Image 1: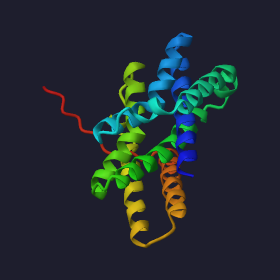
Image 2: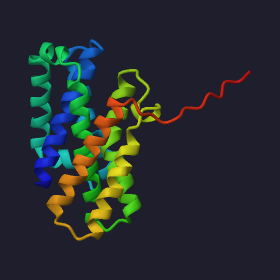
Image 3: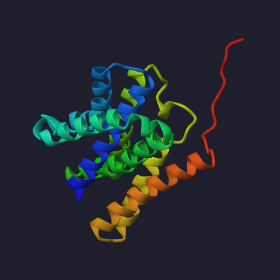
Length: 202
């Protein structure tokens, strides 16, 4: 199940990256690069920080194949995705939930503190999007008032609360991912946001 979630998250973020790149009117090679860094950027940074090298996608070409398939699907069905305005958001939300869980599990597997595991989960989920937004000349979502990384932290809290309750791992993984996805959907639906600060110099 863990590996399947990883593949689903990779596909979701690859699609999200490709669709963002097409909205920026990049050429096919640019779209592929954005899809790739969106899918593996957070996981790559995580693996480097915990000393797990070569990083995951370099040891398993299935990730590369999945990213390429996502890239092809995004191009082939771009008009359909364009008509479905919520598709990019949906893929991004799925990736957010799945990749947070993966980062949490990676931290636990090497015995890190729950706070550090939560940071790794947030980083895994968010930093591919950060790289994507920077390359597409956008202010990254996590640096704006939109609630994004905070949801990953909430997912980490839910995860470790369930761990203390000795629930089955499969149930913990499912509930954690669903909490992140559902909260993200609610945030956008009801336009919840964090406060911003205006410190313009006079």
